[in-house]
Image (tube, rainbow, N blue to C red; front, side, top):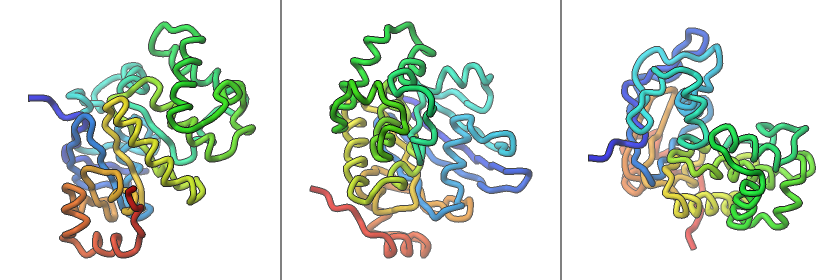
Length: 261
């Protein structure tokens, strides 16, 4: 029997000693898209930061276990966790522009992220990047590689962030509010691009968002969070069409859905 891609068991997380996530449990499989939805402050981003080892000094997992491909990421050393980031776990940040180094070109940053994990030539990285740029409708890839983040629009930097997260073909991709910094006209396109990446590489994607419309469009399963608690979890169609919790019903009523085409 294949082990889950991601499994959280009775996870509790605190910031500065104050509990923010309570007894959280979920499981996702390779190639699955999981939506983690809820309003701001519900603990969504905290969960993925805990898995990536990015809680910072104020954040602590006080109880439970988090397994990625059967490995408890809470028990391993920082060096091993750093090696997992990229090839095994990738992350698209809410504002990729702010996560990029302003004084390094896009090409330099992509190459540096790749060479940390395997021996590879710069030309090979550039070729991989331009192939991915083409897949997500970023024209003139050579110019983008030579550009600094401040020379690109916010939407372009967000797509660069998607490429940076996907270029190592991670088994597990976290996306933390990946469209909230984008114009409305670009949001649906970026979501479709992420789904195309899942199809291309077979990665599992956990997308964190306050927008249940995004989740209803792209996710196979959905976890609804409220004030640090998991209040509803199941197949997206079941949760959207037959929500069991009042909070879930309010989210569905409040947010318009993205129409498929």
